[in-house]
Length: 140
Length: 140
Image 1 (spheres, each protein chain N blue to C red):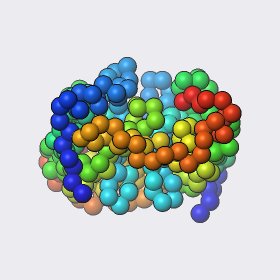
Image 2 (image 1 turned 90 degrees about the vertical axis):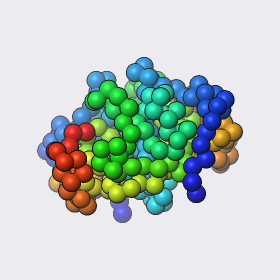
Image 3 (image 1 turned 60 degrees about the vertical axis):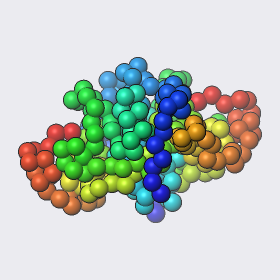
Image 4 (image 1 turned 180 degrees about the vertical axis):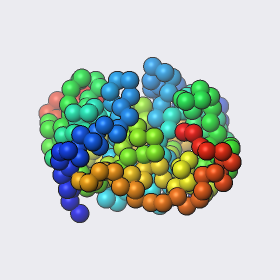
């Protein structure tokens, strides 16, 4: 399975059907082929347009206020396999091929803290040292 | 696997570690035991507290402006199996036992519209007639 790029005029037509929020964003859940949920991030219209037309996942970083081509600094790219939209047209589910780890802490998935009767418990340890991903301590 | 209720003082301690957004909400992804992503919804502190202490999933309905005990009108309840928090502490991943369907359209998952080169394509048909879930046409 590989991504079939979405081109005009379908691309604009699809983007027009998305309910971006008041900040112009839509949430996107990334899940891998084994259905492990890796992360949730946000896209603006430009990021989603780039993602759908190239198959290389691009988010919008709310903290940096700009497009975030996943893996551009860490090499941990996401390649799109499929994408679906929910019933409210305000959330996307992406199936991705994750190169390496998704989380900036060096873990495969960002959801590594279990909520338990004794508090937060780490479910996994980092697969890679985050300083090897970014060279400097990571920010989210 | 069944949910072990989280009680005080751990409950308050956990809730204090959550980064609720400026509206006092956190996003929550619900995934079933087969790892199918069913839906994304929102919780406020009260909804999350109730969910963690009872094991019955309770969201906050942004459209209705009140707690939304999933299944309270449709019978399609969600029972919590596990919960984890992401690295930014602003998104939850819930593993749930879904009674019936999660989507108000009568489908198992809310993510039923594929984004394809020819536009939006329905991946699934309703398992149940939504008028049988609610008696009246559903609102989200």
